Length: 319
View 1 (tube, one colour):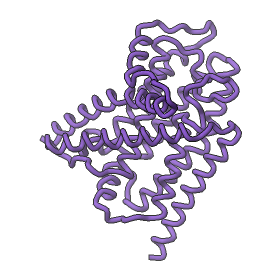
View 2 (spheres, helix red, strand yellow):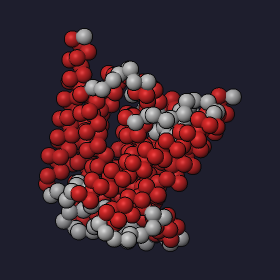
View 3 (cartoon, rainbow, N blue to C red):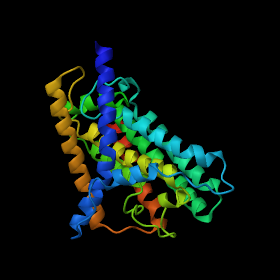
View 4 (tube, rainbow, N blue to C red):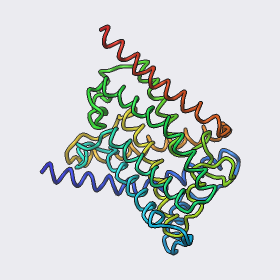
């Protein structure tokens, strides 16, 4: 019975996040437009764009290798696999034993490498520029994420997201300075990983500043749809990850509980809506920084995560 319930919960979770991913991107765009006094496109516009692109055959450069053909599928698959591990409305999913923050970080790194290889494969100047910037930023973002995982491991005794959420939900840990520092560091890494303002602007194609867009300039048709879908899945993943770790309230316990699932679903939608609103307000109120300041931004996140781990380690040793 538990196996059937776990599979059912996993399937509902996958359907939920697949439906939510384009709405998250479209909703943030719509909210930003409204905050700037514009009408804005419908929140469903990303879904219509994906449907249009999926109908078109990709056009590849003459010197493109098999990497350009495989990379979009690898990037989208890695993003979907990582998102499938992050709890949403209920616990007890079939993949819950594998829902480890370190594994999720590895899947995100796999998607990043696939995009960087796709940008380098054709040999264009912009593709190489974007890939070099992406990997240099990752050298600071990934250690910060792993240090946050270390903080969670010291507090909860594990990096499994389900166990961390249970411990945080019961409130036994209380409010800690190290948790606040880890949250700020994780927010900075999330902004950089999703190429959002102030690190990058997803709405521009200015060659001297773009990072993410530079690597997929050569993509078209189905391949471009897969890259856009992977981007939407990653953004949904990071918002769901923040909700699962730091705001786990309302999540239904493991097992088949229709009423608990409805409450968990409503709570998850509310948390995602609040996070989307906060992100839209943040991006509307701040300007994009110079690309050469991004290492300083991520370096600060790395130092905050390191400080959180040191404070927590010292406090547990002294106790």
